[in-house]
Image (tube, rainbow, N blue to C red; front, side, top):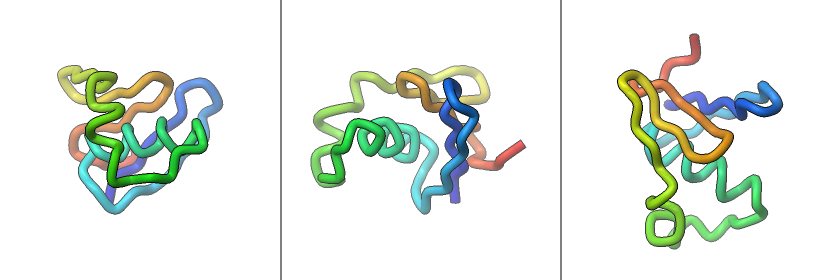
Length: 68
C-alpha cells in the first residue's frame, strides 16, 4: 500500500501499487484520466525521484509507501 499526498491541498490517497505507480495514478486521476492501462506511456516522463520520495507534479509519496 502506498499513501500519496497532494502537496497543494494536503489531501491523502491510498493506492495498492508501488510508490512510482501511485503518484502517476494520483496525477492522472486528478486530470480525469481513469484509463490505467496507458498511465506508464502517458505520464512516466513526469516522474521525479528524490532521495526518499517519488513525485509527479503536485503528488508525492515516500519510497517505502508509508504515510508519515
